[in-house]
Length: 203
Image: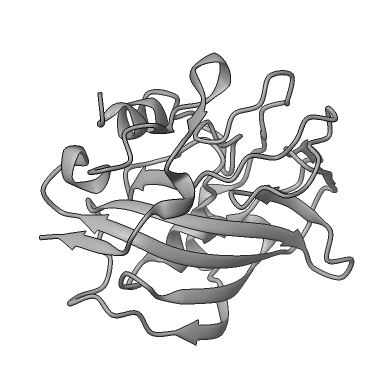
């Protein structure tokens, strides 16, 4: 079923600030886990380093369903710790998978999608690209975590490159139209059609 992408992403929400992404789940990879003081997170904000405007009719709002690519790096070293674009080896030695992530924006903690990444997506339109700096309070906080591609040291500042592919304000079936075999994770992972996704919005 086409809406399995969103259902899978929503069903594994946790209380972590930036837990493990389930949309690109890999067997044996650890969950990203951290804690952060709510007041500190509320006071923090991301820095938008680059912002390429998209072609959509409006920006992403809380409640919208989004399909997007991202690459997460550690500031300073540039080490990739998480990515939906594949082409690298996971920490467990497996080949990274090219598969975009899907979320309901602003829907609470989502595995692998930290508060800072949700801030980065807010206001983007389809086809848009952003590079942002995420402070520790909006990322993994004060705990070292095991991400898919690297260990993220405690207190790390993160850099994300984000590209918004699709936006739906009317439900998951529209968001995943034509890409039913690109989604889920773990034992049910599929990546057919993931490279042929066209920009689309459904309002």
